[in-house]
Length: 381
Ligand SMILES: Cc1ncc(COP(=O)(O)O)c(C=O)c1O
Image (tube, rainbow, N blue to C red; front, side, top):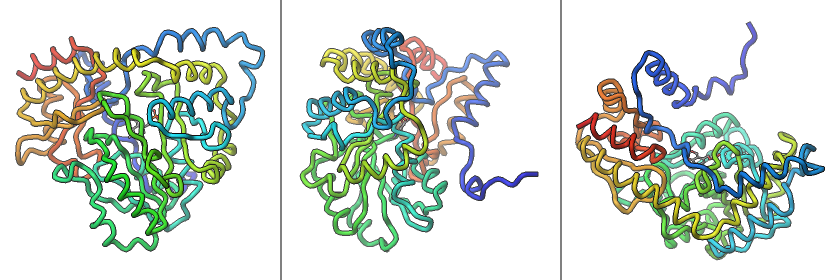
């Protein structure tokens, strides 16, 4: 028997990996399960993106190893995208590193900055990968609670009271998944001041800016942010390109260089055609965002009805690709979603997979057709 590395004992199989197996078994046994759990966009990417990858396949360098830093035109397109949508200047030369999705950036940043025993501030509720990657690199998660009463924004006074002597990194994620909470300029400014006071690197994970959100914001738009902040972004949700695996990390050139040191030892560049498609996506006009959001808006209206049919409440001002709904008092998230799955063949994510602060909440994905959502309403009613 070959022993696995100790780090493997620090993490469990991803919740969705386990639960979707169960859902798969239900479907195989003839149950018509509708999946409102996972946030994998079902809509098509822009047509010109598909044309760009298709047309690129005959290019002379299409099938070679690519640059570790991505094509210069891709970094140029990312720089223009940040200027246009966030009014942020990032140099295409050394302040941008294209990634294969923003998820891998979480590992690269952690490997670049964390030693065993370092502590990492992680939002509760929050994206589970921050915690698992922290554990995989031997660092220690320190959860900070987010709360509806504080609009799911960090309580800086409470953070400042913690022993921060070992804290090196803090994950923030605005617009926030799973709650859809928006950042405020004041919140970002206090976070940056907190990071400077305590010598902590803040990473804002920002893949949901363009979904049902009138005010896309980057933490890098705050003066002085680059001294202590990095930002991750992604084409997965904005352009329905989750399977393409295109993301980016942006920030000060010295930090980008450190992350490149890790990444260049792990992969050998992003496929050329994917980069060509990504460049076209980043150049999309305003019309793309309007059309995308009109579909999500229609779906969200229906999901709100579904939430009401299940006795839940929700925040109409929340943004993003999910609806975060509060269960009636005293109901437990996992028992509730299991009941709905069993009785109505509708799969919804329990809030607890995002942390203990998710107890009493459930998360609906907007990645399902209006017909499917209507069917869910009929079933639970
Ligand atoms: C908060 C958050 N960050 C990052 C990711 C990863 O996105 P990707 O790697 O597709 O860019 C997700 C995906 O669901 C997410 O919800």
